[in-house]
Image (cartoon, rainbow, N blue to C red; front, top):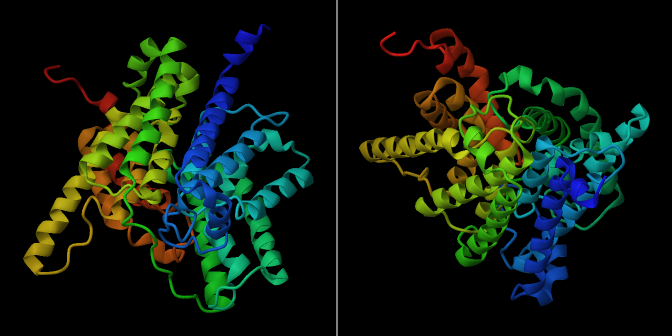
Length: 444
């Protein structure tokens, strides 16, 4: 096979996509104004709490250079996994990679990923499976990274301390537990929510977080106080929007160069239900969708006045990660409209009752929430715009309550919320309504 043909293989195109993103992060770290503090910043963000929303861009954490270096290193580790023998990265790999990369700016570090990685690696060894064949399990296993940091540096007391042997052992015991639980539970996720949410790993990781929170902080010891948010008022609009524009424009240009435009028009008519855009259309069309959908997300967050801190910036990639697996602008906008309507209604009711209104569209929890609500786009694709709007509103109602189940240690909180919405309301949809293709055309 010729070199050009090998480079155009879907798995190699996806690997190249990962490599370009890692390079963009590394270049940004080297060019950042605080690059002299890069390695010290990486150490600070790795050794402090990731519980609740912590913008790694804050100087007390990683700063700009340290945060981008963290993401570059994690991205290179993941790229290495996807280059192992037996690995054939596809649409699920794009979801896993960019979901993990997004969290590298607010909760995940190049230090706290290793205990769960060790768990998956040990699972592969015992089950005699090649790690490359199960490469997607490694990034999905990191959804409890803030808990790993907590175990390393604070558990079981309330005072933050340095490395201890007991902390390291506890972190690896929990990481191994996650590594063995995830392969067994992950395939059953779609059966639980009937494939109506794209963040499938949120079900096993979220329920595992609920179990571990009860075990570690109810049975064994009391939970420490929830730490305060960090750096949420810091606004780096030019840097974050500029980085995203470069990444998403490159994706569009490469997709067009590979001839994906014609298939992309067909992709936009896809419901997003149980989808694999790279397989159903082409990797080129999925690349174009990655870029177009990414620009669409930028437009939404800028229109709603979101503050461009590390959390908002990371959330963009946690959202665009589904661009190969079902999300596109035409099936996500109803979810966004649902969030906007729910926020307006909440503001109106708070005005009537005289209570404080805290759920504006630019509030950090809502900025993050709409990201994972977008994973409900198959509902809009199958049942129509009104169903998508309704499910967006339902997600808005629940998203700030679910963290109480896991004490803010689960990064997949919004995806778990989407699953809860599906558990309760998908049966209602199926009982009372018909899907779009089952409805008779008007006048027939």
